[in-house]
Each structure stands twice: as C-alpha cells, then as structure tokens.
Length: 145
Image (tube, rainbow, N blue to C red):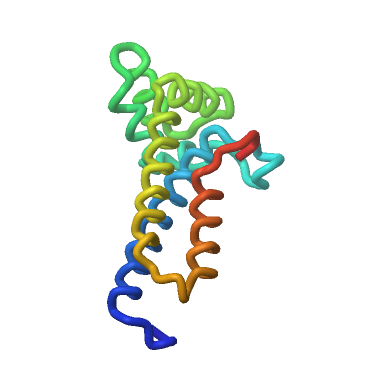
C-alpha cells in the first residue's frame, strides 16, 4: 500500500502472507515436538508442557485411541508434567502420525502461498523470489529443524 500497489497486488500479498503465517506457525508447533534444543535454542515440548492445544497435539488426540489416547489425556490433565511424563507425551504424539500430518499441512500452505504469488507480475520479480525462498525454508524440515 505504501508504494501505491494495485488492489490486486495487495490482495495477493495479503493472501500470501496469510498462508505463510499459518505454515510458519504449524512448523513452529512441529519443532516444539521434534526439534533439537541445541539447534533451535529453545527447550522441546514447551507447548505440550503448558497444555497449549496446537495442531500436533490436536491431531494426536484425534488419531490415538484406546489406552494410548487415555494415557495422553491423563498426562495432559496432570497438575504438572515431569520431564519423564513430557517425554512420554511427546512420544505418543509422534506415534500418532500427527507430525507427518502437520508437516504435510505446512507444505500445503506453502504451496498455496506459492500459487498465490504466481499471478504477481515480473516487475516485482525480486519480491517473488524472496517470498519463494521464505516458503521453501518454511516447508523444509531438516535434521534439528
């Protein structure tokens, strides 16, 4: 808006930012479960320890059944989570297939962002390139993430 862009460009960048924002949040939620604290610089499992209902946990609760679901629910109901209990909760989340689901959702939203950017004209090609780089980084999950 500051450089007097057309409404179409503004709408496209708004949609692109929305998709990249969702993708980044889901990526961050995945890293909270599977990341390497030495690599990320933050402890693993903080969201789970705080009982924040993020997508990996929500999806795990949907996918787990029987004893495993009850165990995860019991861990989440506890007054506090010991390191051992947190580790057990994170293992249950991983076993549920939730992480793979969340990674696929992250990639899906990055693809939506890329598709939205396709209509941008070549006169702002450098902006497109930078946004594609951001989308590719968000969609990548490497060792340590």
